[in-house]
Length: 153
Image (cartoon, rainbow, N blue to C red):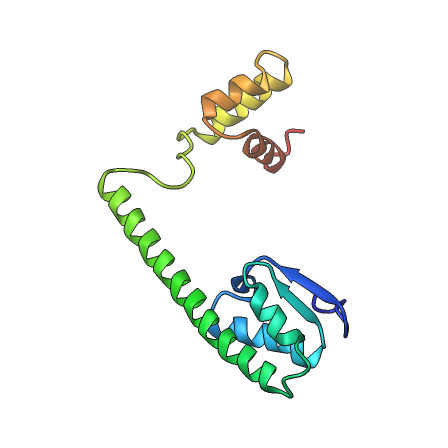
């Protein structure tokens, strides 16, 4: 998107943290768009920042004020993101201690010969794909991946 923006374009963004994952990246992206590209940015959650940047009668003080506000808000957003990650990590640890399993369920251990027999029975119309998927406890996509790898199409 940055490549197609040009001077005078207006970019609407929900919040400041959409510019990056951390404090430095948010500031870099915002400043690059405003100062180097000349893009007008409206942050929906912070309309006052857009209004300060639009003021021309303050003879440069507007950009100074906008930079200070941007620094503070970027720091707050970055700090909030770190807190969320910490809480998420704590929540995952608590869930694991309670026995919650994360990720895909394990596929039932079936020998290659059994898989070939199942696939051949499907080919001979003795079993449906759905029945084989239930036996293997796998997804439809994984079933077709196995079939393709075994050249049974």
